[in-house]
Image (cartoon, rainbow, N blue to C red; front, top):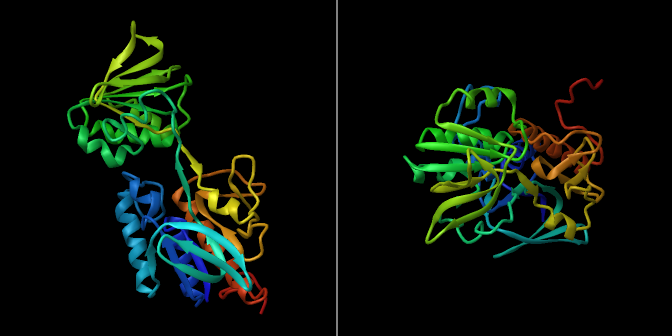
Amino acid sequence: MNDLIIVGAGIAGMTASVYASRYKINHLVIGEIPGGQGTLAGRVENYPGYLSIPGPELMQKLIEQVKQSGVKIKQDKVGGLAKIKGGFEVKTTKEKFQTKTLILAMGAVYRHLNIPGEEKFLGKGVSYCTTCDIPLFRDKVVAIAGGGDSAVTGALHAASFAQKVYIIHRRDEFRAEPGWVEKVRKVKKIEEVLSNQVEEIKGKEKVEEIILANSYQGNQSLKVDGVFIEIGQVPSFTLAAGLKVELDGGNYVKVKPTMETNIAGVFAAGDLAAIQGGILFRQFITAASDGARAAASVYQYLHKGAIPAPAWGQQS
């Protein structure tokens, strides 16, 4: 039986593994995509130690760090979690594993607009990842739906490939960090369409135009070759719910500052977790912090309250 299984191979899960290795916790990491959502980030410019680094490169460095400790990263989908005597059972599509503790770090999934044409043209001009697919639209006209950091940074990245970029947001101001918004407004290729939203995506074999809720410059539609939907994510809570882990109103896993859930031996970290009394702050740095704290708490759980060294601020 493993001492720990980390479900999720993004920055939270991988950082948890780094710390678990340093605490000599026998563990396994299971995730569908090593690097998780971090591999989809075009550039990361707010992670300590890096002025600017592509998301895939940052995650590859972390993956290599995990592997150097001899930890196995199982690339597989977890289909179920169950309580058993002495711990938990983790079922993947190929195997079953047993563990004394769990760290849930499954992250979140893309939010959909749920409009006509969205599903029909997925992969035919509709995408949920600007950084992944914008190279396919070199010298084309694209639209990005959303107003947060992912939409605004996506627009900046898109502008380096596309002929023109419309960024469409239902509010009259973007919700993104002011620094990103300022950069967007300096790029002539990017055109803001505020107080508006996409109501339908149309075309024959692929995306050809979008229908707007309100008229823009005298037109109800815009001719585009691609639509990137960047309206955030929803937590991947299904596995946690099946284990009877307590969720909040937004289906985030409720955790204490120690990353403990209501189920003894189960911890959560990263975009899936909501610290009681805290704010939802979905950043690389907070996910990494969650993972480190979760690993330390696992150590305490396995060693009946002992604090992993070095215990900063603790009297000897």
